[in-house]
Length: 575
Ligand code: GLC
Image (cartoon, rainbow, N blue to C red):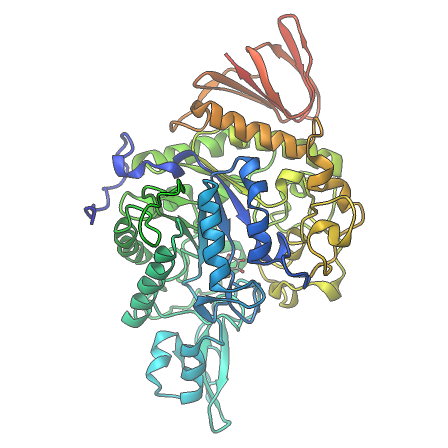
């Protein structure tokens, strides 16, 4: 077992500790949302067989790893983020044999697999919770969740004033087995997602065992859902008269980003470090299969008030990466972008973890549509905006992201330049937060519409049995088939950019960028062997040529010693 290192004291700078380096340092990681990626059995819902069949596409795209959103047994009250059994696959996605085959095929292709772990809450159909309800007050299983008596004369008021992220109170009252109203239980998300009580040793034991189960299956890591939520402030204190929606993400809350969470991740890190080498049945195969040499990783989904607090999750003895939501939330504006890039790099440097970059995921409006709208609307946008503008900026934003040091996340379909589907009729929507008033989320279905593989055909090649959310007209023109080999297509831009990152490791390496002087609205920075120029303004700007154009997000023409950098365009130069 590798040594368990103590957390560093705060603020010290220095080189990355040796054990913090590995494949993930500059990896491009592709998020698959299984229900919307590819449907192998034609039931209108994506599945593991579908993902397996499309692995060559991901290999060809050039990514290093694939993160799959949850595929475990689940009533799907929150699209699988409500897990009823952490060790089985939901029949709608396949079986454990399918998962095994997927992991093996991915490894054969040199792709790593990261699975989603949902430790903050289970489904209300999880055996522990079902029994806790059925056994009634006094059941020992209730201690594994947060059951409390209500306030008021008859316990008719919730135990505290916390609100669910999806809207409404964070508490639901139970009915006792004899039919009378009983205690309340806590759910920071939907009522079908009761929060675990992480003070209870059985909860901690269970998750250590679940980690081992999937590590033994051969996975290369875990994306940890709501990593900031597991520990609640002692006594579950009221928030007071604050507007919770305003505080979320801007302040430490009694239920988010409590310091106690870090102890949990230290204990998980010890387990991951026990798996220094991936061993399949019988050990490394003689048939020339590809086997990873160690490097199982933990990735935090931690919404914290500042990148400095996010850095706490990736101290040397905790997780390996954390999503950079501050970057995701930044407008298409040179000054803002430069600020968030600097702050992010500065925050991660002392802990030696790679900075990560992300523009889209399954919880936010796709960045093509965010950038098509005026800034300041947040990450849940209901209007299509100016689609051409959005796509131009999105392509430029991608080349900027892929020129930064660290690891980048790509959400399925962004390589096709897909917009959010903003006009889904209410009756087809499935996001639980859409149905609860005034939640933080609500419009997440728009980024979850199944992706188009072919120009025509049933559900544009997604599968033979339609698609669980309707695909818009014209989706086929954005398909993989329509864009493959097409000069200037967004898909080919992603392929070229990721290939260039591989061919020139300097692009993703290191932990800093060297800013060069730039006119207002532009970013110009050097990376080893490269210069990246970004015009975030809506007008062309003439700048001196910086070397040889390696890649550009829209067509450029150099003119002697100068170039006219088109509006909303990024260019990579080799020097
Ligand atoms: C995370 C997931 C989101 C889910 C929530 C509750 O934020 O990304 O999709 O709804 O956790 O599990």
